[in-house]
Length: 330
Ligand SMILES: NC(=O)c1ccc[n+]([C@@H]2O[C@H](COP(=O)([O-])OP(=O)(O)OC[C@H]3O[C@@H](n4cnc5c(N)ncnc54)[C@H](O)[C@@H]3O)[C@@H](O)[C@H]2O)c1
Image 1 (cartoon, helix red, strand yellow):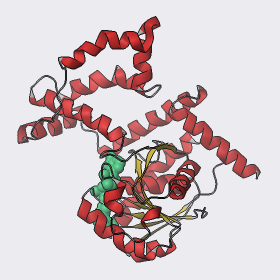
Image 2: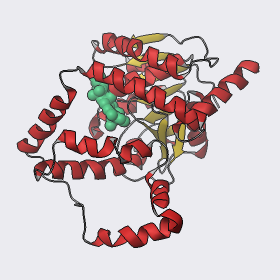
Image 3: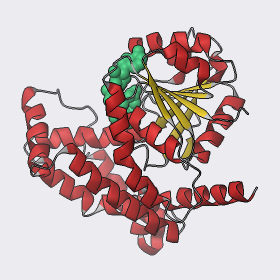
Image 4: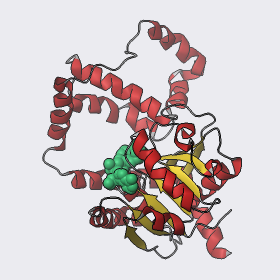
């Protein structure tokens, strides 16, 4: 596997910025490429803003010297120099195809090209691309610099070597690579999130609850447990001594009623207003940057607690520390 010294980023918005912050903190140089030259100032600001929480997350660990960030609007320059390319352009198939084709022509065949796409399948993205066997989906979660999950999905043409190399790279920057068995739209986690979001939109539309009340129903209850164990393990415990089987006996019948809807409501202006005005009220005048800081401080604290119990995202943090220590002893 090629040693990854330079990460190339195509598209440097919210997700590109997150990849940059994580990689730089792990000692990897980053060439960030965006068609919009104004994104240089943005990404430089984003990595500065992310640095304190990354330092807090890895406090006491032998983290290598920080990588160097460069910016270009020339995708061919980025593709010629990068050892691994992560694409983060907008979630529009034509934009992705148009952006990926030229970099695949230029990047050496052993350079992996991964897409951060939230929902497209790798087979539809690698169609017509040069050396499609090194292309895959590496779907991260925002904030990329603090959430360790990355879903690795191969398409019809993707090689096993590419998938394993991508996994090794993501692990080397502290991530948990979930190897998705089969490509489906939305991979794994976004299908779950979309199901929940659909119900949120129905609840807004049917005037059942505000965005704030819906979020209360998550953060004081189920959301608190999800970071420790996933929904399946939590439901097994909720079955008491009878475990998962008893849980199904108790709650299985509700699936036939059903409590929830399968199709999302039509996105009317009214629903959009309720979503936008509701979340603005919840923010209580705080800016997105201020909310990000609160979120990030809590994400760091939660992961450090989970690491003490070697569970969930804390396991990824412990594995990262072991890799850093083994690397520094070598
Ligand atoms: N935002 C999230 O929570 C999230 C989470 C996981 C994955 N994703 C996925 O990541 C990708 C990027 O999402 P985002 O939220 O960062 O979007 P964004 O709109 O914040 O950023 C996209 C950037 O791509 C740039 N761009 C557009 N065309 C380009 C081109 N041809 N070459 C180079 N740069 C180009 C834009 O100028 C912009 O800066 C999407 O596929 C999205 O589905 C997003």
